Amino acid sequence: MNRLPSAALLLLAAAPLSAAFAAEASPMCPPALLATLGHELKVAHFAVGIDNFGKDPDGVLIAMSCKRMPDDPRLTLVAAAWDAHEADSKALAIAIVDESTSAVVALKRDEIGEDAATQVDASSLRLDTAPYELAPGVRAFGLDIVSEDRSCGEGGMGPSRTLYVREGRTLRPVLEGLTINQWWWLRGNQPRCSTPKEAASALLEDYAVTIGLGAPGRNGWRDLILTAASTRSDRKPGRKPLHVRVPYDGTAYDLKAFNKSYDDWRK
Image 1 (cartoon, one colour):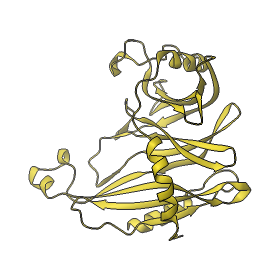
Image 2 (image 1 turned 45 degrees about the vertical axis):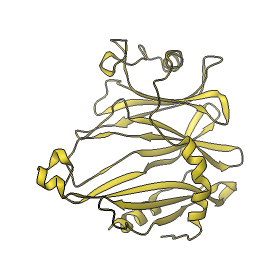
Image 3 (image 1 turned 30 degrees about the vertical axis):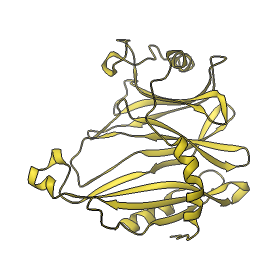
């Protein structure tokens, strides 16, 4: 476990920039943009279906998010999930589109797993364009995947964030599956899973993880400073924040050490 007293200063410096570009629910993507991506993917009816308040009864799209790239407004980031008729999953595409030429200039195809408790819906994708300047000339962007949690367990998980960098016509994940929000019922449960009396006395602890940038390390790539903080629904003080430095290993930011420290911190 790496506890870094100076990490808080790094996060404070980055926070105003991050807040302006943070992951958020995006308006529906322009139809022409979706058509460009659908043509590249060779997927017919790449539009929102009637069940998701769209206008195409044959539309396959379930979730989408679009944002202009802050460092190059000619380009637009697109994330889209659709029903490819595969069991327990939805297809996913992350792309950079040049709208002026109607061309997909970089693309990553993936999938989102589902189970009985977690399902992809219209609000499942959120793009994050915070200034992740990871190395000279290398700026990453994030994608949060938010699956609807229908369970009545003792806790739950919020969005999972992956950071991507562009390498020619491909998008490479350099940080994968960072859970940026989690919660645990210290007493009781959510209202729909409790009696009115139990819900009135329920006590929730919420855990949030933020990403900051540290000093340059291997090959000029900056370390990530991951900070976990907790809040309680009774407004009593939460746990002391956890700061963990995650270096770039030449291929990716490995989360194993952070996950172990985070699990120990939550105990």
